[in-house]
Length: 335
Ligand code: GTP
Ligand code: MG
Image 1 (cartoon, rainbow, N blue to C red):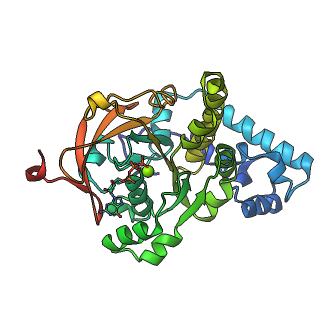
Image 2 (image 1 turned 45 degrees about the vertical axis):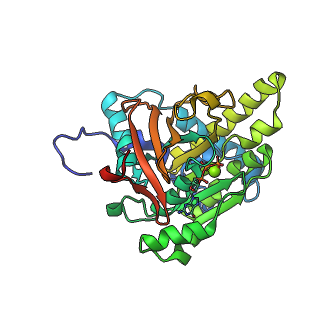
Image 3 (image 1 turned 180 degrees about the vertical axis):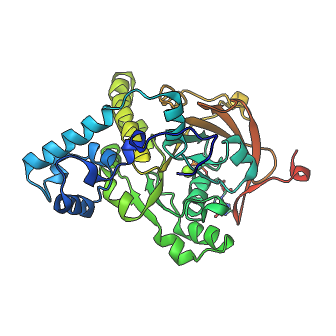
């Protein structure tokens, strides 16, 4: 740790969530090796594991004891001093969006250990931002990346590898290599979507995943749970799904990015008024929300920071979608 006089001295134990599996009581080197083979490298990842999965390599009793211990460890540090919390927060990193304005809106880029939601009507750039982030996360830190891979859960069949290659090329990355660092899964139903995330841990560590995309988060839920009487069940499932997403983001210090399509009200086309199809669905889960809308200028979109735990809400910035990907709008181009 750097001997910076301004940096409060905090013992490593406060970052216990990132403890390696070997540090867990009862886990010897052989067991640790087996757990790692399954993709479990940290205590928090183990806490979210299902016992059934661990029984692939361990006896049921041992698996049960390990998961119980991991969970106990995680909840055993519920209180921390604010300076300790600051230290914990210092492990948060950011991924550039490729657009300076959008990065500023987000306080430097999309944050790890948190969920960022891009929402807006069709064609506002939600999936394009996701594609761009999948490449940007691979960049070296001095270029705004985390030198990591991306996991892309696609629910609408809109992922395009060709676009990843195109964006990578523009950033002087080898397109083939860039594609190999994006792990893709298509979710066929809401249950399948949940299953994919529940089994993502091994992929996370195997491919050093630092960005998880769910595009779109609620399309399946919306089409499968219709009507008021199903709303409670849908909410419950979504909440469980998001909780899992948050846990993965914390365990692997990854950014979680989700999209959500909302309808613009016909009488307020260029405002951020949205219809009832999901605009508030995630409102009670702490995360950053960015509303996207079209601008009268071709290819230009406007992003607005609607909810943020730590940044001024209501700020806006334009960006454009070009062959190169997501880009800044120069002042002379703005209308
Ligand atoms: P829905 O998923 O339908 O809700 O829309 P979205 O918000 O995900 O929109 P998406 O990001 O897919 O597309 C936004 C816009 O990006 C489109 O209207 C196109 O104009 C543009 N776009 C998409 N793909 C490309 C591409 O490969 N090259 C360029 N230059 N523009 C693209
Ligand atoms: Mg889309």
